[in-house]
Length: 493
Image 1 (tube, one colour):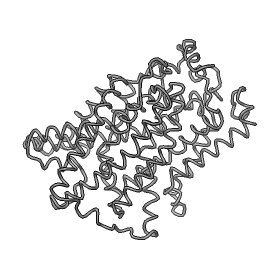
Image 2 (spheres, helix red, strand yellow):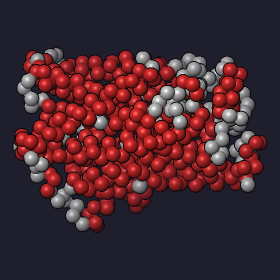
Image 3 (spheres, rainbow, N blue to C red):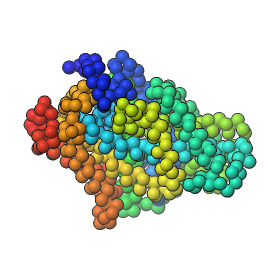
Image 4 (cartoon, rainbow, N blue to C red):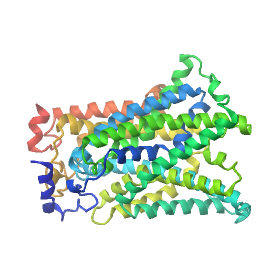
């Protein structure tokens, strides 16, 4: 049965507890995202302060700039593979990530990967909101010097009153946009992407014309031989993969709006890897020049922009910083958890309410503490959650491409009574067992020193352990896991 015919049958399950308009398959006539939209999406997400500063964390760990850019580029080439694979069902069936997860985890079990993904997004949302809020606070201090003394010694959870106000103001901008819906997000990303790129190039031209390329580009780094480089490179590569591993799961949230597979594949390929490489390189070059200009390495672009005294330049710079931060935060860190939280109770939690929940959790997580140390950020925050995301990505890919041969039954994805994906009371224990195995093996090195090398490869270890375990469980014992009758022969063949 054609996908369009399956979508027409969705009215039969519109009363299901698993259905709401935000999670329903996108009608083919309403799929209007083209190649530019996906390229702009990734350019907008990649042109953010964390990407700009990404190489700084690696250089602070001892890499030279070439090693840092190589690590960033390779990590993004690797993560592009699961991104494109998981993008396919979103485009073909018009479904978001939590609905796709129902095929492998069960109609209720899908909440497990959805909430794991949502938790990571809440953390990322908080981090980017804090960075944007801090930039806004710094600009306010330059424009209005008395601003920094507002509230005196007031402090709450490590934030001064001015810092708290700008953080919450920046937070509110995100919530406003998310309440405007997905089409507003598409329009915002379309014009945000070129604006931020133009601003970055303008800053690059300015500092290089004033100071040249600076000393960082000639610094050999501390990891001059392979023996020293490898122990830092491997966990750093895992961290670079983890940087966008979140999107490797929820990319169907965006590709469900694609006109076709070609548009999303080309758009994403052009938008992700080149942008991450170029923008990180721009960050390195500008920072290197600041050593000559200002006597210290300034990795935060907002700190550099504050050196300008012209109020119009400052306001334009502030606007660019805000657009860059909002662009990545909306697309990468609110859309997915909004759908994920909606999937918990579709009849009671809408996409907009899910976005609000994301924002509130992002505050509670106190992101300014996550960003306090480059080593903790790369090795702990990025490393640990990669051990959760790799296994989920593997299970989705194995289920859709290898076991189901890219065939899904849309109606059953929303059927809360019986169907292909109800398994045992809504849970597929094969995927849950496989997920648990992957997470345990990937992260055991955090608590068992002799196995620390496993944690260094957390994303890879989790991906392959869970993928292989899921395949074996589903092929060897489909009856035990209550696999639907139609596919039992496929699994056991």
